[in-house]
Length: 148
Ligand SMILES: [Zn+2]
Ligand SMILES: [Zn+2]
Image 1 (spheres, rainbow, N blue to C red):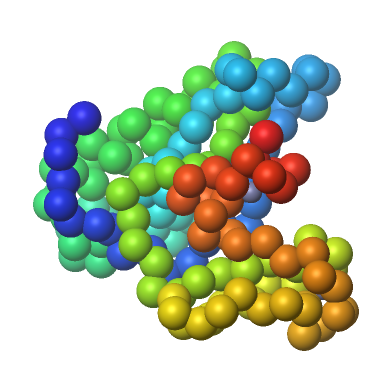
Image 2 (spheres, helix red, strand yellow; image 1 turned 45 degrees about the vertical axis):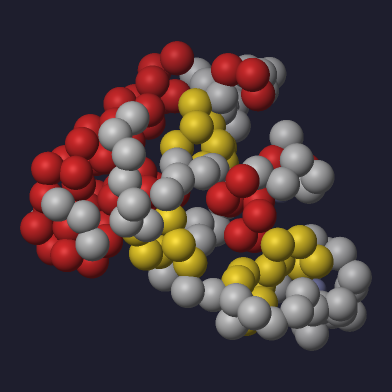
C-alpha cells in the first residue's frame, strides 16, 4: 500500500455496514472488506455517474488514484458476488466533517460537530442505545452487532 498523507473527505457514511449472502451461513472470517474510499468511489462513479476527473477533485486525490481505488472496489464486489462471501464496509484513510451516531432502537441518525459530546438519549425515541457510526465504520467498534 502506498503511503498517503491526504485523507479523503467523506460527507456521509453508508446506510449499511455490509451485506450477507442468502443461502449461505455468514462466515465473517472470510468477509470481503470494502474500505470507505472504495465505497465512496463506487458511489460517485457507478451510482451517481460521475467521471473519474470529477471524483478526483471531490476526494482531493489524483485521477490515477481514483482509478486504482475503483478497480480495487470492483474486484472486491465481484469476489463477494461470485464466491458468495459476506462483505463489510470498514476502514480507509478518510476524514469525516461530522460525528455520526445511530440509535440502535429506532435507527434514527444523529450528526454532530466532531467536538460535541455523544448524545445520551435518542432525540427520536429516548433510547440510550446510541452507537458511534464513525467508530463502527472507521475502525470497526467490535461492540455492536454490525461490527462482528
Ligand atoms: Zn431512537
Ligand atoms: Zn460497531
